[in-house]
Image 1 (cartoon, protein in one colour):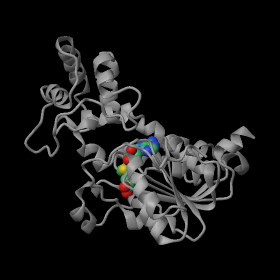
Image 2 (cartoon, rainbow, N blue to C red):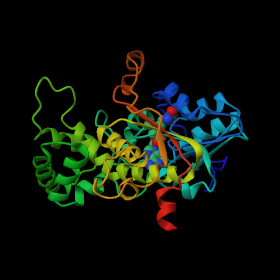
Image 3 (cartoon, rainbow, N blue to C red):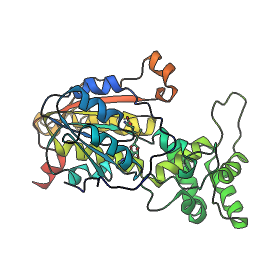
Image 4 (tube, rainbow, N blue to C red):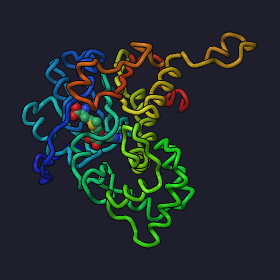
Length: 330
Ligand SMILES: C[S@@+](CC[C@H](N)C(=O)[O-])C[C@H]1O[C@@H](n2cnc3c(N)ncnc32)[C@H](O)[C@@H]1O
């Protein structure tokens, strides 16, 4: 197992302490926590899912978060559940290396937490000025490193692919021009340059810089790569009958989860109808989907927590087939 938290961590609690867990009841229903079982909460955040799972049954939770600021929050949970809770600092994409045992459920609540967005120092938001950082794990390449050093084409590709921003080329050009004068250091400075070239009509509900910020954030944290690795890792560590519940907030993420589950449950379009059935059938399904369609929030949840609006939950149950990685390695 990976390195558990030390109870003497000196990291301080974030000033903004608000994060309302999204689709919590639906995630709990999918996981169906039971006595003596072990669940992975791959995105600990403020521990909303973790606490709910621990309260639902006399079970264990191994939580993971890549953000060092999750550690002091985890200590609070540890005090309440000393023998049933562990937090590992790391990425859920490596959960099968961090956790050397099979588990009965895996929950993922993809993206950034409200605490991360609301803390200007983390550089995720342009509403208040802060360093252009955006690194969830506080290490590696920052957003400022990217915008100050990448080529115009690389920047346009990132903004287009991960931000789905049509004005990506104009934005990349403006970034190159602006950084020759002054390298980017702050979120407001960067948002100002983006807004200067993105046309925004009165009907637009979002700030013209939103998509570019999203694209940079997804790139800096390799969020889509993490999700793909996390799904594979979950397939590796789930027991037969183990449950997977993934909440995503963005169509790029939901598409990855949907494609993975379709593919792993035998619902992806098959190969060649002229081949014998045994050859055209594809590998044995490793998951059975618990519901064919993604589950969204109720109106009441959206009213209480507008951040839940775009949330989509997909759930599945592990079959007894070997994971694709195990099969390929054999
Ligand atoms: C949306 S919040 C989760 C909130 C949580 N469900 C709760 O109820 O408090 C996402 C959290 O996952 C963490 N995270 C995002 N991607 C991660 C990854 N690849 N590996 C580990 N943690 C990740 C973020 O640092 C953040 O704390």
